[in-house]
Length: 78
Image 1 (cartoon, helix red, strand yellow):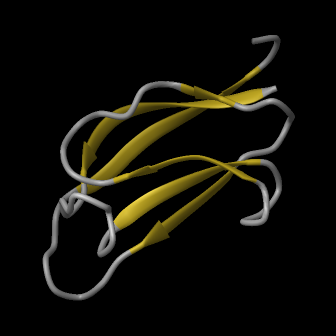
Image 2 (cartoon, rainbow, N blue to C red; image 1 turned 30 degrees about the vertical axis):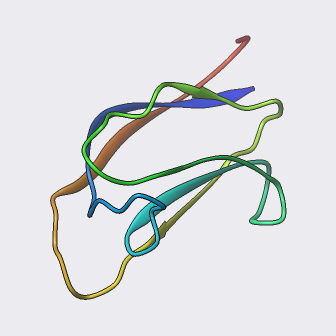
Image 3 (cartoon, rainbow, N blue to C red; image 1 turned 30 degrees about the horizontal axis):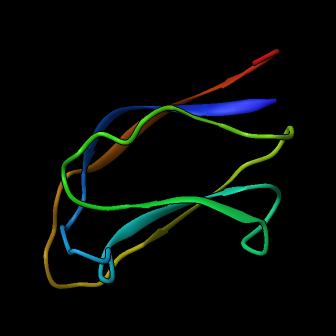
């Protein structure tokens, strides 16, 4: 299994994360189960997959720029 651990996070904030967001899927593509959609400054919790694959999708518009995010991947018996 694999997972991700966030080190820093600062993406444009919106109550429903409609403009800029990071979306994580538990599997090989965007048809997999959504693990979470994140925006704003709150550091997301560590995420662990149920398999050996995760998909990370970042969407952004061109209006407000923020620093972005920094994360680490890990694997092994979780």
